[in-house]
Length: 116
Length: 112
Image (cartoon, rainbow over all chains, first blue to last red):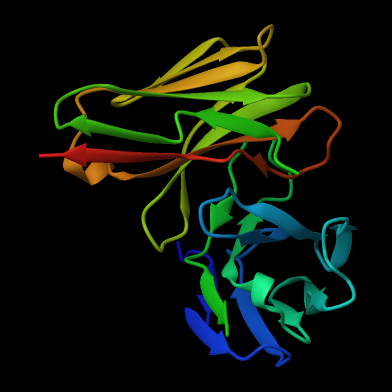
């Protein structure tokens, strides 16, 4: 079974530039998550999709971050404009439709973003 | 916001020794999960323990859950150098939606 795919693995940009990350979840997984992990901290949920609808985006800085999940499969997360404090690893995860009450989330390898 | 706090933040042991990590959380949970993260990599699921369970085993891993104290522990027995990683607890809250809320993590180093 193929895992969660993310690209790119690494990205370096200057502040005020824009950047986009891509995620392809495990086939058939209805729920997709984007997490931000700052160095030395645990992952923090940015946004959660159920199929192609947003379930939770309460911690997404909507003035600069946006995400979409077209057709309920792939997803992109965009930052525009980037700030120095956005330097982090961005993790995508997916889970089956029945939720996390009985199963785990499956994580991709992450994209390490450095804003200089 | 972080749901869980883990203790210790860092742990260094010799190969063959046991490693114990603790996690405390704040609100009622449906289940608690432990994940491992190798440096620069994604998170790998280790074990899930439900709120009505007190102990669970998987290979060299033993997890306990005390809902009255809102705490959990992860024990790795007979540690190996390959166990060197960061370990995170994550909770699925009761009525809190279908998402994981992570703790701060414990960095484990197993030395030869």
